[in-house]
Length: 261
Image 1 (cartoon, rainbow, N blue to C red):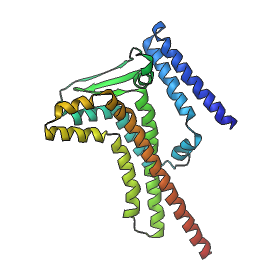
Image 2 (image 1 turned 90 degrees about the horizontal axis):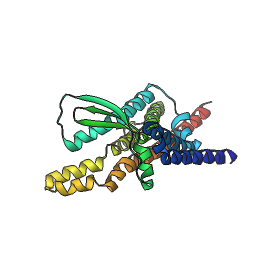
Image 3 (image 1 turned 45 degrees about the horizontal axis):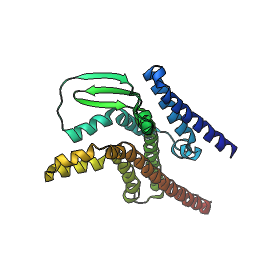
Image 4 (image 1 turned 60 degrees about the vertical axis):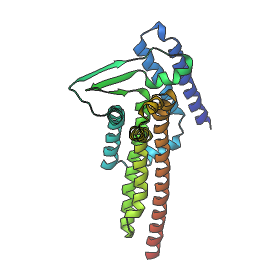
């Protein structure tokens, strides 16, 4: 209990420090203070997350090649290529030869937009042709967690497969369910609802009215913040279910070995 209170106190102190940086940004270097404010807030959020969550997605997971390959590929896509992919899907392919990059920070908005500011500023941006990809504090934070969850889910799928092979059971149906959960979790972060709305608007001739919805602050908040969090929840549930199946299979295997002995 004491340890938990200390974590909460540290997290709150870091969040208050983030606010202090926000209110003093005009007295110093914008890029540096924006970085310190974002670092303080997201570190505070990381600290306040219960240890059990990190145990489930990290400590209790074997880290084979399958884990690190899935972790690395997803993190690379989420942090660097997601914005470009999204622009291609929604804006069409119109490539010309150009590459550029840079680092920038946004001028602090009014206090009610503080969370948006520390989520998107500072940013490392790249241009590949007409397409822009931004690496922001929020995408890095949520990307690391999602990559760890996907790596853990993939590792558990392989572990489940090995256990099923040992018991000589049919593999396809039992492995297909957790595999579908991983695919659904990642597709959520591709903003599938936006893609479906866009396609429907083009096919029905209501494109101009739908663009207003897709560009609205409410819908942006839903896709930018809500969908990755929904993906996280889906992957956590999928991992929990696989852990239950694996524990049950291990229990059955132990019972079988005990009877043989």
